Every structure is written in structure tokens, then in C-alpha cells.
Image 1 (cartoon, rainbow, N blue to C red):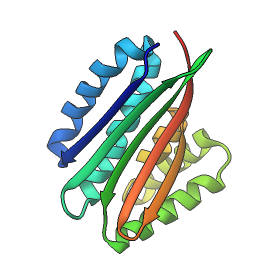
Image 2 (cartoon, helix red, strand yellow; image 1 turned 30 degrees about the vertical axis):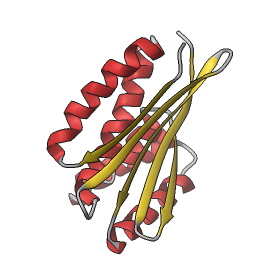
Image 3 (cartoon, rainbow, N blue to C red; image 1 turned 180 degrees about the vertical axis):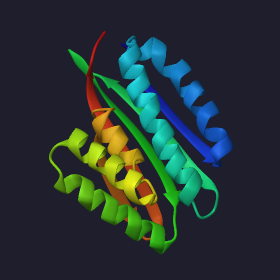
Length: 158
């Protein structure tokens, strides 16, 4: 497995999310050599980019993807950085705190789906989906109005 580093500044909008995902899948597939791993990483990027498209206050975001091979596996991280208004930062913080308080990622994801089906609220499913379906750890770093969300996982070699 060869290392991979992608650093892609974007003018972010909903229209660029899916094409960026397809580009990422094309770059990841020969490196990860595993369809499931490629799906998980691309899905994480998609969800994080969708959030940036909704909440980036200046329409700009940065996507960083890192694949670092190790002996029997690889450390993979997907990070999206953007600037956001305080209300969105507060909502992200609350979502993150709730997610981290639940030790069972899948149970939390299903609970969110049930809650949203009942009250039709803002879904807040993206990070929970990455954590549950992608089996990835989520980290959030906030510095003033700059928000960086990182999804990471250790993936076996194919």
C-alpha cells in the first residue's frame, strides 16, 4: 500500500460534494485496494463536505485525506476545515457532546433516526453515520470561527 495525501481547497456548495466524492473514490481505490474501505472513507468525506456546504460562512472549505500505511494496516483520516458562525459552532458542539456520550455508535445513530422521524428536526445524522457505518472516530477542533472535523480509522490492508 502506498501513502496518499490529498489537500484540496474548495469553494464549497452542495453541487461540488458528489463530484468531489467521486474524485476521492478514484484516488482511494488503487491505494486502499478494498471496496469497503474505499466506500467508508469516501462516505466520510461526503458527509463532512455536506456539512461544510451547509455551514461554511464564506463558502470555502479544505478537504484533507491522509492514508498512512503501517505494517498490517493503514491509518486513514479525512478532515474538513471551514469557518462557521457561532450558532453553527454551538450546534456542532452539542451534537458532538451527545455523540461522544453514547458508547454504542450504531445505537446512537438509530436513536437519532427515530428521533428525527418523529419530530422532523434538523437531522444531525452525518457525523453519527460516519461514526456508525464508517466505523470511524470523530474529532472536532474549534479555534475561533474555524472548525475542523476529522474522521479517522485504522483499516486493514487488502
